[in-house]
Length: 119
Image 1 (cartoon, rainbow, N blue to C red):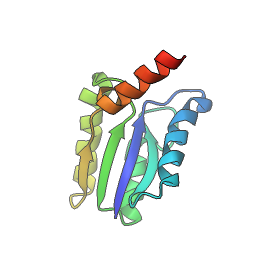
Image 2 (cartoon, helix red, strand yellow):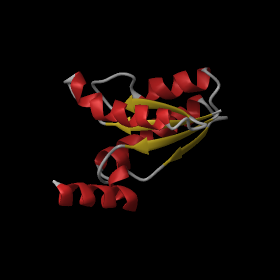
Image 3 (tube, rainbow, N blue to C red):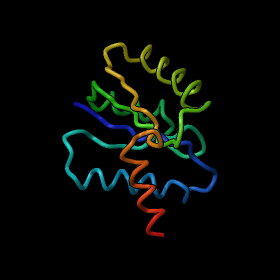
Image 4 (tube, one colour):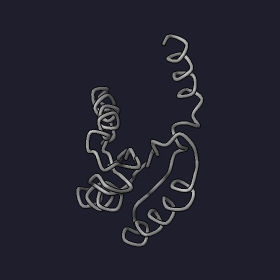
């Protein structure tokens, strides 16, 4: 079973997660074949390690982590690889892949540009 894990920073205010959960819900509404979940670096649960462990326990053998970050920075260049390496040690059979941060995707850049033009 495949899962897509939307990975975001998190914040002390739980309402901050609203847009991330909305992305998850929009993906689920499209009835994709993969399971779609969210995980956070800090402050909001589930944290990335917990989410990965839960998905594996529920039968997922392939997870694509999609960083909901605007650019590849410290969190995605240093912290995320360490977290994923630890997950690979815990789950040797797991296929774990990371997409580019969403802010680096041409389709996202185009959507933001269109939104800004219409604002």
